[in-house]
Image 1 (cartoon, rainbow, N blue to C red):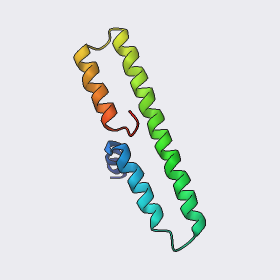
Image 2 (image 1 turned 180 degrees about the horizontal axis):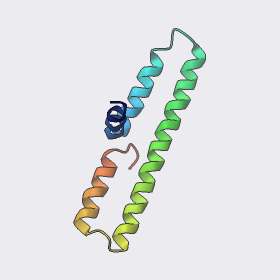
Image 3 (image 1 turned 120 degrees about the vertical axis):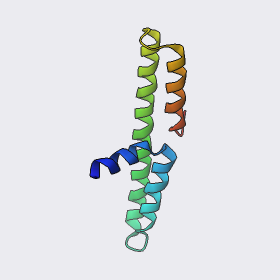
Length: 89
């Protein structure tokens, strides 16, 4: 069951993850002002890690295409899927 939840989170878009982290952080506002700053830093860190992973996936995809391991159609399809989950690309 826990693995299923992790897979569902992995399928969320980058925007969804950032919004989720910010919403969870806002629930703690009444408890501590320090937590709000920590939540913001955590959200930025999580977003940066997610975008770094996206960059690595795009780089690997480019290498696979240049090496002829995937067709142009597959390259375009996968690139579109990767970019759909990114805030930057």
